[in-house]
Length: 209
Ligand code: PRP
Ligand code: URA
Image 1 (cartoon, helix red, strand yellow):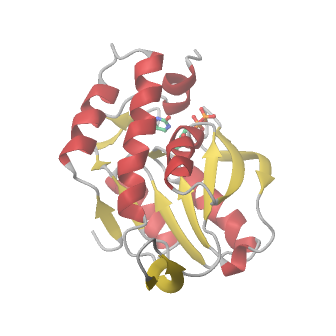
Image 2 (tube, helix red, strand yellow):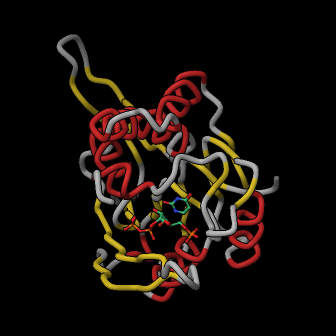
């Protein structure tokens, strides 16, 4: 699929299977999501631009590579995005963070906004939007609408599970935003849940419901 990268690293796939298992505890699910975010983060940042800086090693002066440009932004779609965010911040501790509060209306499946806070200079930064699920894509589309309205132009979307219909809707709405996912699952059920999926990501992560 154009614009979509599947992160099929064996460790990602192994951890994902344990997360899918309904017998995995809240603590286990949370730990695995954090672990998997390190592996996903490695892939989604693989092509970041480098420049060089001069440093002095204990032996000699040398030009050594460092990340170019302004610190990147992780934009977490609440609540479940925070499960990915924590591990990503271990990888890139200096990253800036945006929080986007959205929940799905259970009847209409529309994304309802309740919170937005982001760095003011989004136009100058790479923004990586994180949420474990791309189902109808309503939440992801709304999140990126909000970020673009505040100036973001260089955006990536990182999730764990997506479905073909969600990817299609997302890439028609935001063709300029590449999608990174660990799996493309089969389809949505009649209540908008991903099949086989792993259920409600926020509930699995926080032990609600
Ligand atoms: C879940 C998930 C996504 C959204 C995906 O959040 O974390 O944000 O559903 O579904 P969509 O693609 O159909 O919009 P939810 O709305 O359940 O909120 P929560 O994380 O607070 O539980
Ligand atoms: N949101 C979830 O948390 N799970 C799904 O399966 C679909 C949307």
